[in-house]
Length: 271
Image 1 (cartoon, rainbow, N blue to C red):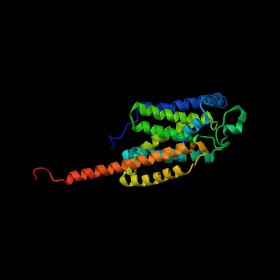
Image 2 (image 1 turned 60 degrees about the horizontal axis):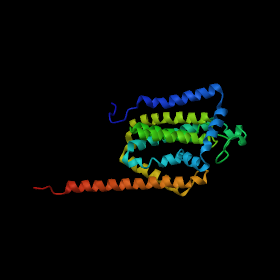
Image 3 (image 1 turned 180 degrees about the horizontal axis):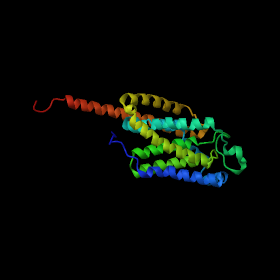
Image 4 (image 1 turned 180 degrees about the vertical axis):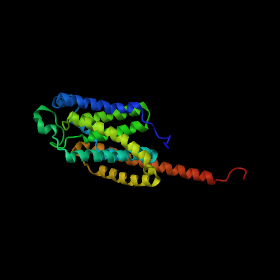
């Protein structure tokens, strides 16, 4: 029997992956992947390197893992769905990149023809891991939160992260589109699995997740695991913000629990 408290998947939710599939098909049929990449890469010149490095950091797998931390106490159902999605996209990305060898723009195009930011990667282009992760996170937020501005912000950030991979000269448009498509569908599958495997929302699971992700947040605060020195402040801000927010959440919950217990044990008037 279905749990009526679970959010329902709305019809519009299938529109983003359909759009990605249509664009992907159009690029493949016209064989214009290089031209599309060069044009989009050129459009990204409106912002500097530091801006795109900051944006693309929000698609990093560890960053999005740490961003699950604030949901653990307040919304364990969201946290559990995000964790399952994170595991699924890790399998999706690593599985494809292990069995399929693809070349990045730097291996195909003269570097003088496009803008390249960061490390000169040449291989393992398909799919874009950052786009996949950002899409899965945004899709999960859209499933559980109905406010239009929250959904719009989540989708906008995911698209910006995806575009940053092209603006930085690291991925083809097809890499990004497959990433967005795979991430969105992974979130759907994760929601379905997490809704059935409810042990991930238990108190014990919350504690385990909190310890593991909290440890990841501390490491991220201390060590810049990316190839961009400019990303350090962004990483530290995300890590510290997630830790402080979570500590405050647990402290507030503990205080409220004590207050309720005191009310229950206090003598009632007239007794």
